[in-house]
Every structure is written in structure tokens, then in C-alpha cells.
Length: 443
Image 1 (cartoon, one colour):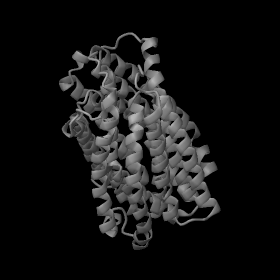
Image 2 (image 1 turned 180 degrees about the vertical axis):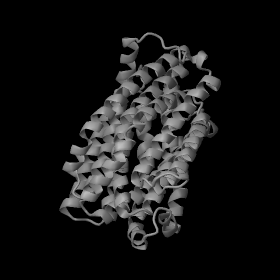
Image 3 (image 1 turned 120 degrees about the vertical axis):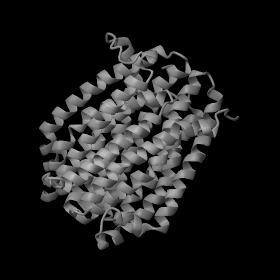
Image 4 (image 1 turned 90 degrees about the vertical axis):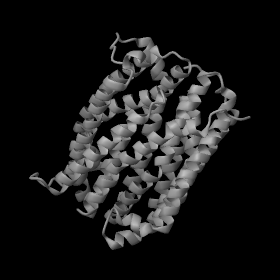
């Protein structure tokens, strides 16, 4: 078997996502680098607060990925007029969900962290960060709806432009608000949160303006604001809800990881935030190519080209591994240089090196696992992908707990759970694609 999809077509979808993710991760890198100059408490608190925020935001991101799969399927079926209605109904849900989460978190955040964090300093700083950061959910969820539209229709250039605007906004306000420049007060960790919210608002405005001016919104039926259709929403929900919960569970596993690490001490937590930021940059090529896998698999099934799906996934995997391998070589060759971007604390740099080597190797396993896993979700069998993710995260959290609380492992060994994660999710995904009944899934 072979696929008629060329590398150029895969790259056309993947590279704007990769470039956009690279620019967007300037936000994470900037926050970590600036707060690393403020202190270990702020660095550690940003890890807890940032991962908690990412856990919540994955609810919206996951729902948008489900929407993206449906958009790509309609695009492959040449049912373009149904795309706008699909995106709008997704936006209805995302806006309501964001509002509910903001209210719930404003009420319960203090109680949550009073119970799970041991360090008083970390607890106070984390609360200060999330008091502001939580408001970004509303704008981030709207942005994810637009991403679903543009990725699903393979028009991804706007995502790159938007994230450049977002990143530049964040860098400027990070510098201004964390340290207190240009006449502003120095807000410290709260300044990082405020800067990120301003950046998300800016991106949201840009998406709306761009879509109205260049997005062919009339052709796809966007901004028509038709009457709510329960039957249409139900079809979206059936596909998108498992993706939503799958992504939430994935990041809640990472949240538990950092809660366990916090019990190892503020120094280990600070190391882990630096490693997390570097690791996320290494995942950028993976996200680009998994988005391509999601979109192209769904598109090809929409065109009844199921026999090309597996060869396509292998072709995407080769491209993804090539990109990640380059980053691995950089990490191994220049570890001190890379870690020093985030902190000037020499002890922190020395202690973080072993963990950096571990996550560099883990990223290769994760590439294989994520590309095949995205192939599963791209088929529309999102309930299966949800089950796979749930099984893997349960084992991931259990292994992390055993490393931290039973074997009292080093921070580098604790990070080795990422290798385990990549292997297991890959094995389960490949098994399903080989033997599962996904070829004629209608969505």
C-alpha cells in the first residue's frame, strides 16, 4: 500500500502549525526566563499555576480538535456550507464552558491549593498567578474555535501570523509588568499572568478581524449566526467531547506530576519548570505533524481513501522524527547554554542537565506515540482515543507517584515516566489502527 499524499502537502499543513507553536511558546519561554530571574519560588509557582491553567484550557482545545476533525471531513466531502455552522456551534459551547470554568475556579482555587500544596510560599504565589491568568480562558477558547476552522480547511498561515502577534504582545508586557518598566508597577508573577491574558485578547481580536477581511467567511457560512440546532450540536458533541476529556485527562496527569514533584522541594520544582519549558519546545514539531495527521486522515476517509491512511501516518512519522531529532542533538550538545536561557542560577543549571537528557530521549518515543495516536482520533473514533489516553494517564500518574513517594527517585528518573508514556500510547494506538474497525466511521 502507498499514499498519494506528497510530503509537500503534509508540510503545507504542518509547518504553519509548527511555526505558530514555536512563536506561541515564546510566551512560555519568556515567562519562565523572566521569572527565573525573579526567584525559585516564582519559578516553581509558575510551573504549578501554568500546568493547572493548561489542564483547564485543554478542555477547550480538545473540543476544538474534535471540531477540526469534523471540519476536515466536511471539507473532504465538499460540503463547505456546513463548515461555518459547525464552527459556530462549537463556539457557542466553548464560550459557555469558559464562563463556567472562570466562575468555578474563582470560587474554588484557594481551597484546591490549600489542600494539595505543602509550601506556603508556593501556594501564595500560585494563587496570585491564577487570580489573573484564569480570565484568559474566555479568549483562548474562542481562539481555539478559529484554529479548528483554519486547520480543518488546511488554511493554516493565519495561525502563524496570529501567534506572532500574540507572542510579541506577551514579550512586551512580560518585560513591562514583571519588572516594572515604562512607568508601570513591578507585579512580579502576577505581571506574567496579566501579560498572557492581554496576549490572548490581542490574538482573539486579530482572528476576528482577519476572518472578516480575508477568511472567505461567507463561502463557508461563518458569522451567519443561524438558529441553534440541537441535532447538529449533538453530532459535534459526540466526536468532540471524548477529545475534550482526553486532552483534559492528559494534562491533569501532568498536573499531578508537578504536585508530586512539589513535595520533593522548591528546588526540584524549579528544575522541573525549566525542563517543562524546554520539553514543550521539543514537542512543537510533534504538534504540527499530529495536526496534519488529524486533518489528513479525516479528509481522506471523507474521500473514501481508507487504504491510504496507514501509509500516510508512516510518512508523517518520518517527517516528525526528523524534526525532533535535530532538537535532541542540540540539547545533548549544548545543555548548559539551553538551560541558562531560563535561569542564571549555576546550581540549578547543573542539577537540571540529567533531566534534560532524559526528556530529550523521551521526545523521540513521544513522537512515535503521538503521531499514531492522532491517526486514531483522525478516523473519528474519538471514544477509542479517549479510552487509550485514560489507560495511559492512569499508569503514568501511578508510576510518577511510586518514583516520588516510594523509591524517592532523583528528579531525572522521575522525568523518565515520559518515555513510558510515549511507548504505551504508541503500542495501543498502533494495535487499534492495525486491528480496529475504523474504516467506515461516519461523523
